[in-house]
Every structure is written in C-alpha cells, then in structure tokens.
Length: 160
Image (tube, rainbow, N blue to C red):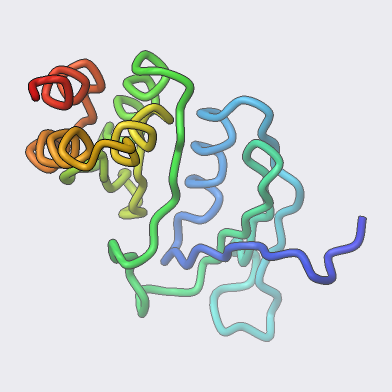
C-alpha cells in the first residue's frame, strides 16, 4: 500500500493516543489498529512510551500522537460522523459524549477533548432544500439543538 499522496489526519494527544485509538476502533465498525510505535531512549519522552498509533476507521487512516500537553484540541478541527438515520446518529452521540461534553448543532467533545459532528445525512438535505424558507426553518430549528433531532427539524421545516 502506497502512502504517497494520501491525506492522513494526525491527532495530537498528551499521553492518551493508544487509549483513544482503542476507543475509536471499538466504537466504529470496519475499524482496526494498524501499528503502534514507541519512544526510544533518545527521547524526548520516556523510552517505551507510546509515540504514535496508526489506526483505521471505516477505511480512513488516522494517526494518534503522544506529543505532550502543548497543543490541546479545539473546535477549529472536528471529525464528522454522517449517519444513515436518527438511530445511528443517537448511538454515536451517546458513545462519544460519555465522559465528554455536548456542544451545539450536533457538535460534541469526546472524553479526550476531540471535537466531533454527529448527524443523520438527511440533515444536509433539509438544510439544502430548494425552498429557501423551508431550508431556513430547518436551520433555525437545528441552531437551537445540541443532539440533532431530525423529526423536530422536519416538523419545523414543514411549518410553512
């Protein structure tokens, strides 16, 4: 497998790269750990500590790095989980918010501080409705939510 030209996100953790990778691989179907590297005696962190973990979620390769406390996650970067339906969206929302925190409009931070956007694919259709008034009502409903409630957004969109 060639890695040239492939874009692989690298997530910077303090010390939780392996724990996070294990959590994500257990949570998402069709996911696996690929490789774990450790720091050697040359540092800069203790020899034997996990340096990087390469893993795959639904075919997307990701690297988790134990780089130290210098660069915490912010909402400026997030991973999207676009789901088939409300049930799947609720499943990922529930699992990812355990020990984390809910945000607005389908955003959340998991227990490692990484931001995610979790929503059913139909949300995009409602927000892109060819009727601007209907799309606007859907947007206004979504802006009042934390977890996306597709039924409520449909109801609001149809109140024209």
